Every structure is written in C-alpha cells, then in structure tokens.
Image 1: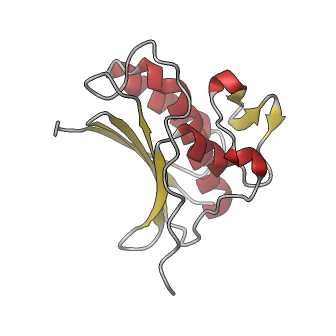
Image 2: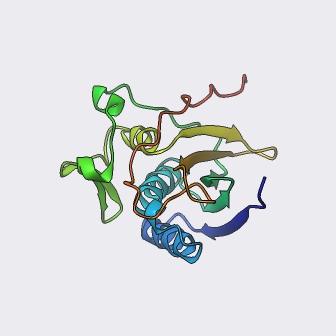
Length: 178
C-alpha cells in the first residue's frame, strides 16, 4: 500500500465556489501527473459541491486523496440530510465525456441537456466513479464520496486512457436509523 497524497480546502456556500472546487481538483491532479483523471474528477466534484450548496446551504469541504490506484473525492457538509439517487432511466446509462457528459458554468450536461433540476447529479457521479457513497460524520453532517480508478499507472491512472465510466459501485448506503 502506497502512502496517499491528500489535499483539502473549504469554501462558503456561494455557487461561484463550485468552479473554484473544480479548478482545485484539476490543479492538484495535474501536479500529480494525473491529467487523465481531470475530466471525470471535475464533473464529479461539480455535482457533489453543487449538491452541498443547494441542499445544505452551508460551507463545504473538499478532500482529494490520491492513493493505491484511486482518486478519492470527498465533499463534507454539516447537513444531516442524505442525498438520494433519482429514479431515472438515464442514470442507468454509461455516461462519459465522450458520450456528451460535461459541465458548463457548473451545471452538468448530457448531450447539451441541463441536469441542474431533478436530482440527476448523483447519477453522473455513479456513472463516472467506480464507487460512491455517503458516510455520516461523527459530530454531525455527512461526507459524500466518489472513487475514480483506472488501472495501469502506479496511481491507478494511465496517461492516454479514455476517461469515463470505470464500473458501477454500490448504491449509496441507507442513512443511519434515527
């Protein structure tokens, strides 16, 4: 097991900070030579940060951990409300930037159609990550996390690999009992 490289930053609930979070991830991954992970990671972080701002309405903390062939992206906020994956047939599709998935001004798009409404953001997270989930924080709040993995590179990512879906992880676990 190799030692991980972690980067953390906290932002206020301003919607303009979603772009800052995307840029933070892109810069950190480039510093580690993991440019190939940038498109997926930027989109996943955009969705997670947007959810934190929209639903928690408070600050959010982004942690990026590069370790053992994976990029772990975690967005933590103080809200006790857990996100839910929308029941939408679109979400079962394999989505990738090559399939027309992208971000424009912080809003997820599939073939140019906005995913800002209707809870489709977690579907994008599920499609672009090998696994994702929600973890309650010990002193309240939650962390929503996603793992992006590509075999081959010592850090799991190979320059020149096609970004996109790496496999579907488990659905988000149920919230803890009240």
